[in-house]
Amino acid sequence: MDGAGESLPTKDLLVGFIGAGKMAFAMSRGFLRAGLVKANNITVSDPSPQIRQEFKELGVNIAEDNREVVNRSQLIVLSVKPNVVKPVLKEVSSVISKHNIVVSIAAGVKLATIEELLPTGTRVVRVMPNTPVLVQAGAAVVAPGSSADPRDSELVVELLRSVGMCEQGNEKLLDAVTGLSGSGPAYAFAAIEAMADGGVKMGLPRDLAIKLAAQTMLGAAKMVVETGKHPGQLKDEVCSPAGTTISAIHVLEKNGFRGSLIDAVEAATTRARELG
Ligand code: NAD
Image 1 (tube, protein in one colour):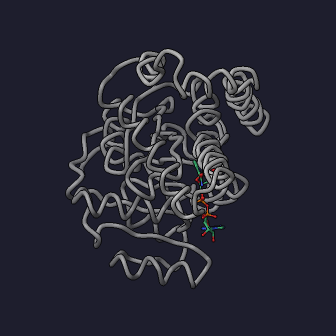
Image 2 (cartoon, protein in one colour; image 1 turned 30 degrees about the horizontal axis):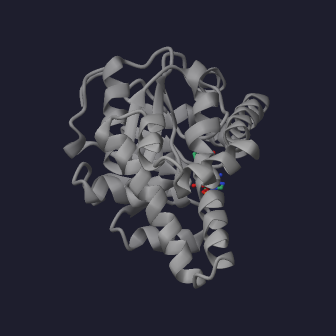
């Protein structure tokens, strides 16, 4: 790569992960499975020897420290916990150049905070992904920093699409994205568990109840995505007059089901704003 701002073909892209935890593992495995990045072009660093071993099995390079990741990479993913982002940036700032793209997936850490700790003009892109990137079904929104080239965001979107859906947005949206899709898998897990409890209460074996509940959520989500129909219309189509489903919907409405989910997204968004 010769200059800042030029588009990078992912095939030859050198990708680094600072922090080799769950999200870094899921993303690097996704990039490899999709054939977007070569294993030999990925370098990771992490203080935990046990975690480094998991990554060795992927065939990626293990760096001795975070500065080595920067030295060996064009695009560097900050995949440490939010409270570790600042110390890591201070540690690597002197080796970051205009040739690097710094991608932060840390919840709540603002672009301005990251840019302040890096050399002026550093190309930074912020992403809010979620844990289903582990099974290539993630949902992510990408927001460019003040010096990022539009092609930098496009590159990050292309990479994230190897582990699910990914859209471009701006930073103002990211707290609400955190509240909806970042934290959302937990709401879905709670719903699956509760639906399975209902099945068990009504006589189903636990393992069958969990399988049915999970597949029902998966199938319903797939119908929304694949038919493009409004979820309200799809719900209406399941509710026959005087049938079983409308009786259940009445109970959900009386118990504030939809209001609870709206409140949950609001609460998580508010908390994300406080953290930032
Ligand atoms: P994780 O704890 O699995 O991984 C973080 C890794 O960073 C650990 O392996 C840890 O050993 C390593 N680490 C700690 N200090 C370090 C240092 N100084 N240098 C290098 N590595 C260091 O966490 P995760 O779930 O993969 O989350 C990573 C980031 O992704 C977080 O900032 C989080 O906000 C963001 N994120 C997570 C989720 C989620 O649901 N897990 C969703 C969206 C965004």
